[in-house]
Every structure is written in structure tokens, then in C-alpha cells.
Image (tube, rainbow, N blue to C red; front, side):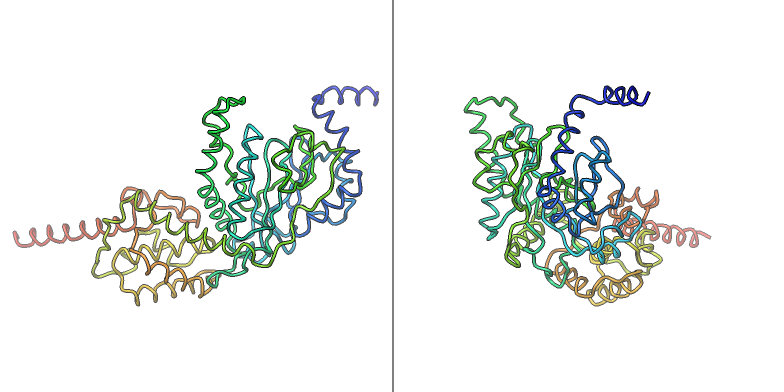
Length: 438
């Protein structure tokens, strides 16, 4: 009876899954494969995948032989975090932003390059490497994704630990996301040219929109997102996520990732301390400039001039602003951005603005570092005032503030103030006229 159940169970598996499961035991039983995966997993959240579904989270590897034990239970691949943690097992969706920052000891910059054609992925991978070399980064980790793309990694050691008194480890996912956008922007023109040349050669590609699909995957740059561990298998392709040298990319073929023929190399290169400093600074400067231009396009801030409202008091502020001023638990940086732009837009003097900001920061469950607040104020005053985000933006919901229907109708905190003041003045005049008639 037991034999029949096993036979039935085997028949229910897809041919592809049967093929993978035969390979996994042989492949992951190799000590060299276990060792490279285990060493890479240090300080990372590691989650096994059981063909179609992931295992429990959080999880980590305590011993090298944990890998094969999980394989015997059905694990087919292993995935890990970009973030580096003091203790991955303490991570949960319940912890606050501050607790996550305290647990996080760093992050690697990870770029996921994928396309429906591996030749396109090769082009972008090489362009990114050239661009990184130009920014002084000579030591770069490269691996095959396991399907039709490549992964690039710049280790945490390469990044400065502080920029303008801001801890780099706290700026995940914002800063790696900014760097990724910067890389996309810097390689876009050459990418289009090279792919156009490939298409004109009539090789085999007829899809003229596919160039958009070979950009680094920004979705990957997010809290607790996972990527395939080097030398882990890929369930659908039955190929290994092998590490490559830069010189191997151009001539790489899928057969080079045959799990039974892999050659072990380290995915994390030996980088110099601060090797990626220039890249980070350039990316942040580019982002500030492009953000200002984008804001100008969307809301024409070039024509916006701060209004000067009289008789200001907290009670006249929009309800959402009043709630923020009571202090926030999470999203302090976004709240600071809202308040600075709101106060500047309604004409509050610099000294008064700074007093209000520092008073607000003391009310937060965990205060922002004074150095960070100073940097944001300094940056704001080097630029023209801009409107705070509209009430329908995720800024508010992201910090636990739900705007009222009236706020949504008025669209923006500044327009709320202006229109409210106008309505009060009109009502006051109407009352004055009614009084004179009596």
C-alpha cells in the first residue's frame, strides 16, 4: 500500500520537478557546495524554497550540514537577504523602523539584470561593470541568475559608513534604490544603442520593446527581499547560479551552469574600504537634482511662491499635520520632509521653523539624530521652497496618518490653509455685514 502511495505521489509531480529533485540530493550533498552557500549566508536571512513555495521566515543557517538536511526535507533552492543583520532570527514584520535599523549592520548593493534574451542581459551587465569601473569600483561580484540574467554585487565594505552624519546602514532601501536608478540612467543611452545594433543585425530578435525589460530590477531593492544564493539551483531551469569572472560574461552559455560541472568561486570580491564612496555620493547628488526637476515638471514649483499666512497656530493646521506634530512612531524621515516643506511654504521664519522642528523631534517615540535633522534643514534652505506632498500620496499612510475627506478635497496642506483662511475671512466679512444691517 505504501509503495502504491509513493508511486502515485511521484506521478503527480511534474516531469520538471522530478528532474530537479533527482539533481538536488546529488548536487547539495557536495561539501564544497554546502561550504560556499554556508559562508555566504553569514549575517543574512536565509530561506529555503520547496520547488514552488518558500519556507518559514525568518530563518538562518546555523551549521553547514543544515543545507543538506533541508534538501532531504524537500528544499530545492536557497535565497538570502541583501541586508546584513546582527541576528537574522530577530527580524519580523512586527518590529519598528528603529528596531530594524538597530538590528541591521549593513547592506550589499545588489543588481538583478534579467531579460527574455540572455544576450541582452550580457550587454547590460557589461555596461554596468564599465560604469562602475569609471566610478572607481574595480572589485565586483558577478553571477548567473540561474535563468536568463545576471546578478551583480558590491559588498557592504565598499560603502562609507556615514555620509553627512547619516548612518549608511540606516538608509536601506532608499540609498541602494537611488544608486540603482542612477546606474539605469547612466547606462540607458548606450544600452539602447547596443541593443538597436543587435536588432539591426537580424540575429533573431524581433521584439523592439524588449530593451525596457533588461534594466536592473528595482523591486529587489526593498526591505527583506530575497535573491538566489550563489550556487543555489534554479527550479525551472535546473541550472546553478554560478559565479563568473568579468571575462567570462561575453561567451557564457547556459551549459556553463550545468550543476554537475560547476567550479567554485567567491561571489563577494575583496574590495577596498570605501571603494564605492564616489558612486554613492554621485548617485545622491544626481537624485537630488533630478528630484527637483521632476517636482518642477509635475507641479510647476518654479512658479510657486511661499504664502505668508498671519495668526498661525497649530489648531489651524490641517488635521494630518496636527497629528504628525504630536510625534510619530515610524516614518520619521518622511514626516520631517512633510513638515519642513509645509512650514516653508506657509512663510514661517527660519528660526521659528527650526524651533518647531526640533520640538517635534523630541515628541517622537525615538528622535531622529540631530545631525540628520540639521542636514535636511541645510539642504532645504539651499533650494527654493517646494510644496509638501499632496494628501493622496503614500507619504501620509506610510507613517500611519489617514487624511480626512476634507483634506483630500483641498488636495495639499498649503491649499488647505489658504482656502480655510479665505473661507474664514469671507465668513467674518459676511457676519460684519449682517451686524451692520441690524
